[in-house]
Image (spheres, helix red, strand yellow):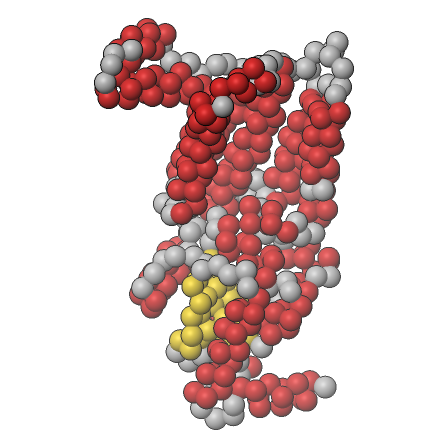
Length: 378
């Protein structure tokens, strides 16, 4: 469901609506009559009145917190489990902490900052950020359907524009609600604008194929030709795409095992592994001992359906990423489920696959065959 174009399209629409609202196009409000009625009922004594008072506060605050809670709940479809729970817990803690603190130390009420233009500026900047998040989910739709309209370069270009606009707005160069021409540029606003613009311009190298670290999990993979031109270590790793029978045949010819990657176009963990773990020199060197094949399972094409059926039937799961080392005859040697940021753990998995493949191979052991092949090439 997390890779469904309909789900991702719905999430993108939610982000877009809230983002446009934060930018000042319209206000999301509830009927005043409903709020008045709830306020009257909440003034009663007892547990019911207390609960209704909390409900009234929730409805009243919806216009302020809706973009955050709504976006978090929508995004939870793609990140189920503890992350969603942590996000809601963090939001609830952040919302309730000021009330608890001020109830404990009421004298600090007099020292609270006054509401004003700074709150409007926060709202507008968050609108630009939500628009950038919207593009990530639109990119998922584009990749799963294989349309090709919102690739890596265009998504990064759009992010560059959006974060640059946010920085220019904070500097007063972009006239929107919250910044007036008469208001002086404070040090705090200048520093925040500098950080936003620095982030925006740091995206430029990624448009030519350079890696952007943690951001790679949220971006489409660069084109193969761009990877080769950049001279990175992972560019030498040749991944077959949706060619499992061909990978097995190549493994038999080269006396290797196959490293099968069950992956997805919209899988953030899959993108992170390939961009940040497989690029490490020691790991890239070890992975050259395998025939590498990516089997995409979340696309709308027939190949994705077959790949998912293969994964489900063979390994009893459709979770991605999922890695399997398979012998030349199709026998599974070992598996590795999910994401890891531990390079040693991944190297141990690869080494285990090499050792077990060598023991179970018929004829020339794999490491001996590799030595002979290398000597022949030389």
